[in-house]
Image (tube, rainbow, N blue to C red; front, side, top):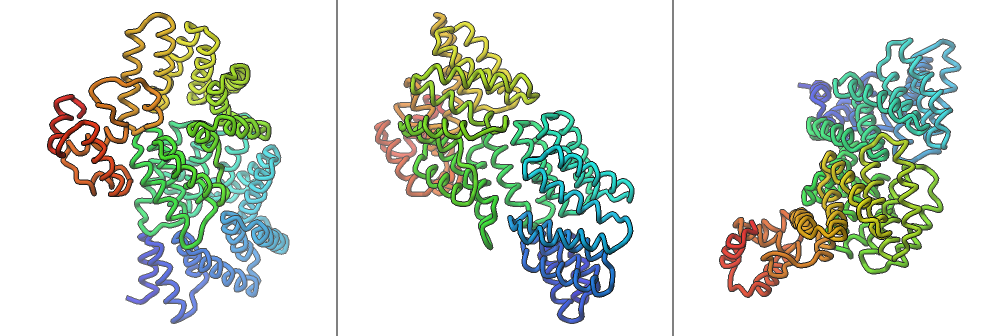
Length: 536
């Protein structure tokens, strides 16, 4: 079998790194034909080798220009512009996009390549804050794709048009288009590069617009798509960040942390990519929720370093650290600077929590009211649940326990529907406060016990620390209870460390603390204690 045969076989199997290496080897023996040079460019890009990919596209471009094939050269120029834009090199991307446009003019005829260029120009309009202009540009690209029966161009156009419609406030219409895009993608009807782009863009947009159900569904599909291509590098880091977010939402925090760390490592090599900031932020969120505040702060700082958004997590970290004035100053500044509704929707719940902690009920009320106004015009269940939770918390502080209880019940039912156990447990604590105020101590105790069980399972140490002691836990922290359960399950320190994504040394310290707090002589005694008191 020749190197070229190996390259074609690897290409058909979507073994992108093997395909790249074999095409490079074949090219050294005999210059590749144009179609194979373009396959090399695509395989290298999907294997995470941008330099080889861009070199291959550039060589193909110059060969086509020399041959007078301006349409083919414009296509190569587009792909270079596309790749450079995806890695944040806007100036070089713009240069190649201008070349593509000029070549299309020299071509002298209508061509499907024009649709690619129209779509990329519309992307630039969308990024510059002109969704109306972008929507028109994407619509033009769709028409071009339909005229030439080019499904890739149609997919690019519909992907962008769906995003533009959401930006324009036509959320349901926008997601109808995005769902149509994903039908084509999951049916393998579009090129792999565009499939990866669509997965990441649609999932990111779902997260940005709080459509957790769609985000979860498409993330699972993306995970399967990446899993079928073991050598895929492009998009895999994004996939792992999104998967970590879904796992966090569903309550599997240890696995969410593993995915966040894996995403950070993948996006950092061979050089840091812009999305590495997202991975660091997700890692920081998990550390904060677990009470590992030093590690959380380090992660948020790395997120800032690589251009990721460190908020509202960093402000909530300051609140958890007892630095409420710093938290108030940060969240107020962020809201002063935020204009888009989806950004404010992410910040307002944090302002309610921070303001109530500082006994500033007036500011909390204003934030809760604004969040309710946004929810009135938003179809996402998550937004409505956030608004009801915030309103219930403020109503409690205003002394209206009955109205608070009603709002909080709506929030709890919505969290249950979304399968978000942490948010549901936090709402249950407020329901318990409302029940106490209404004289229903039994219901309050049941709500607290249910919330406590979720916090213990998740390892939400800061939330547990705010609860009054209950049951036979012997003063153990949430993390110590986790470790005790794993001891009772027969796990070694090394296995516990791997399960909880912490060091062996930290596990040993927890085991020592457990034995000391419970006045027990051994792990076997700790196991018996756990079973006797039904802690496992």
